Figure 1: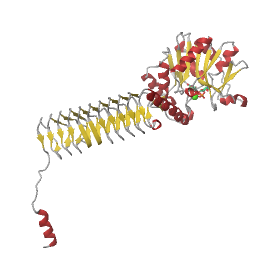
Figure 2 (figure 1 turned 60 degrees about the vertical axis):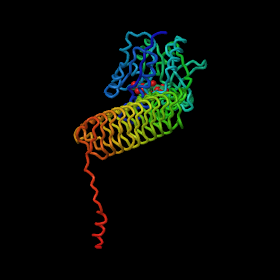
Figure 3 (figure 1 turned 180 degrees about the vertical axis):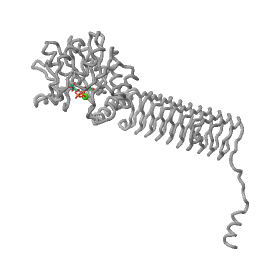
Figure 4 (figure 1 turned 135 degrees about the vertical axis):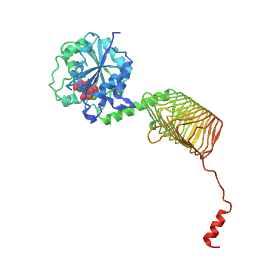
Length: 462
Ligand code: UD1
Ligand code: CA
């Protein structure tokens, strides 16, 4: 098959979004709309691959630099035809077919693009359109066909008369064009339409007039070509995309209880026989192993979680790695580059921040570990707190293997507690503790015999 180029249009104003952020950077299932399109197109290994961005759209241009794709700049928003023309230079030496698509069709699947390219070659066409039949085609360009069923033109909704508006077959905005014919036809466009823009869609009538072949492929699943022009359409596309993600995971052997209530982002991976309870959020670049239990209303973002781990109800785990056979929660909070070793247990109302916990540790009841490095098999008693912040800077606590931190210990960092050391319950610790020592940092208890009896006698005067 001939080599394929690609142009993605992303310089539109997104007027109907009423946003400060460029529309292609709005998120759908945890990643920008443009990334959905780029990820889809990457399956077809297009080169050159050029995204047309608006001049001065700094967030957009720097995002594209991060993604390492070529950009063409559109100085003024003069329409989709003008936008494609902005990529002319990048295709100067290219004489093959070019896939043209928009940044606002995030549901498109690579198979559909491949089918479109195949259709293009099968017909030896100058242009091949991806179309769809919509119950409500309002707002879309309509596909006009002659009596033989051949495409003759695309007419925009706002330029269409009553008769054309009754057509339900719409232009998806996704096309394959023969490169040289496309750029030649763009030279002939005029802005004589309701918006005063140079429409890419007018190229079609031009090709037909020249006697060139225009083919059209109706999308097998019309939902794939839904355009996102408003926030309501974004919500609709998001609902469809989330359904797809859940269906894929269930097909791969993940159990979802009440699937519709569970939010899982596009790039999340989950292993077989993991069970996810209602209301869970699993977001960002998260990878969850096999045989895990993810409780109700759990929030997990950008984490790696090993096999057989249980994250119990209402826990939050962010930007961290969690080993195998770990238990976290209910109501625990693990965050900011924490690392939890295999078979460690973190219980209710425990907060763990920028902390590494070894294997088989117990941190079971309301406690705070911040900026700590904790060895294997350490017991953190109820109410223990690392005082990591002096009001200006954060300091580290190191707790050696096998140490026992008594309940309600207050550990004033920076300091080191040696392996196997014991901290007596209720201690305030502000000095290093040697290995296997017992540290007691609290006032010694004194019992005053008979005190209460004497007190009562004094008060009643008897
Ligand atoms: C376009 C099509 C319409 C089709 C619909 C499908 C045209 C004239 N119309 O309409 O037939 O049914 O898509 O979703 O092409 N853009 C630029 N520069 C511009 C204008 C637009 O880069 O000057 C980009 C936008 O960022 C967007 C794409 O082109 O990604 C489409 O523009 P948009 O304004 O959304 O076109 P529609 O009105 O949806
Ligand atoms: Ca659009």
